[in-house]
Length: 371
Ligand SMILES: C[S@@+](CC[C@H](N)C(=O)[O-])C[C@H]1O[C@@H](n2cnc3c(N)ncnc32)[C@H](O)[C@@H]1O
Image (tube, rainbow, N blue to C red; front, top):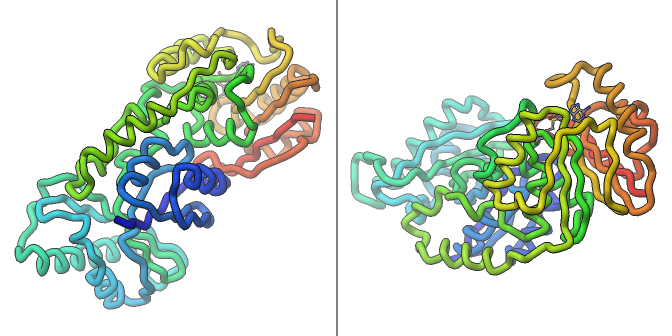
């Protein structure tokens, strides 16, 4: 079955998703602002949910059309083949958003979409009433410049929730963004990998998962596992496929430290749950005393941001000390993600490369030093 999909993602990582999708065998991959479209079958649906490192979720694109009035919206929704996905007993709640469109009241769009889907399913299932006691098929609409996209979510809770991070310190980075930082820093399975402000350990854990090619979603469930139209065997095939691609990473070593001992305890427990604790050495240390024990290294960190942890002047003093600690060394690269526009001034060196990324709604830059 040929299915069209949409992946919503953090701004700035669309191209990474497009690349991983192509590698997974997805077709017609197109990256847009904040989302990536592609096509594939049921196996691809399961594969992307289990294996994507950067996607926020995977949605089935039931259809899209233009609408500027509620009547056009109603007719457009009713014309779509919802019965291909939603069974007579399934639940189908509706939510979504509208930007730059004539129809802007999300409550009204939601109510009309629900009514139109019900009308469609009434004619298909010859029923007047739906109890919706079955598996949830979350309908998600988006209106952008009067183009309506009607989607069904297949992931359930967001794909950044891998299942290993039950505890986080005060300001954890999103797992998808941590994985993206590893990718843009060209982390390899033979690297010596450092995060000297590791908090709950997310960047190191994502790096270790990449090194061992462990699929981030291997230990969790997805809402589409309960969809009747997707055979159960698809999920077991794709879990087996992902398992078969895991590899050893004998040369990979990761080193995590943080000034806060409670964070280090959390990081250790998270790494254990992720199955990569054997690859990461954790200790309590001040980044100002950073003195690596390896000749080469790849370092990625996410220092405090001013808003959440330290005030801005304290942060900039810390960035200055980091600039000294992360000295230019042959065989080393440093990536620091920060929303502070003055980061380079405080750090004391212009980055060799910068990349704009969003940590949720916070616009950040990854400052990369490798020369
Ligand atoms: C934004 S958080 C990092 C979050 C982390 N990436 C995660 O996913 O949980 C910044 C971290 O820097 C640590 N930190 C602050 N000052 C430090 C210092 N001087 N040396 C080492 N760590 C420090 C904090 O304890 C905090 O855990």
